[in-house]
Length: 361
Image (spheres, rainbow, N blue to C red):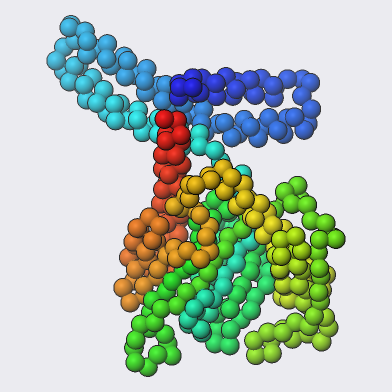
């Protein structure tokens, strides 16, 4: 099907949905479903109308240029506008193609964010803490809610690991490219010789699962309870409030001890467990769809080094798209994260468009 034929179908469907919503016999459930579709079609329809308007304007200008009676001044103005439209139309067509790309069903969801210290000992734990603060600040700017689900502080500050729920609209779409190994290069405060050390932290971003996504049966769970403990004797309980849940079919294990209530810890652990099971299923489906193709951006491989933060040079480099920004201070404050997310999203869209073109040939 040609692009124009596909666009005509979208316009027809948009009008049909609008008429169905205005009908007197539409049920409340159907109205909600139709309203959602109408809203999703809206941006595409606006882009199509802009393209049609530009094409019509181009046709009118073409007639002016082809008319031998057109005076020189009018011809010059028309030629200038016609050239601008020739450059504008492909941009509009590309924007529509991007809007028509299959959406990741998880993009609108909230997430479970996990940050863990990797190689580098205490320095890695400090860096893991700074990464988590970066995401906290970014979430605050976006007016998202952050709730710490579980944490394990190190003796010198920072975290050996920290797990949090970030709730809001479109959280996964903005954070999904953060999964992977984040490497830091800097002089630790404890280093007397001024030598640059390299350490790392691992980030995982999991879309939160809904009840309809994951069916977890009690018979598939092994639940253990034990006494909580923490760095330097913090959060030590005299009751068995910590909870460890093992999902036997997948061997996924989740442990939570952040709350003093066993019931609350179990609820948090189940929320994390559902997200992990959902992610396993998403990865399985993606492998089936993409078979031999591995997308460069957003592979979600947590063993893949994705980014380096070089403090002596004030530099952040994302290795997947060779993006380097000399604004590390703003990055760590969460202020430059949008710029990185936009670049990664654009690259992902380009990869998927290229794949569609290759499949169409």
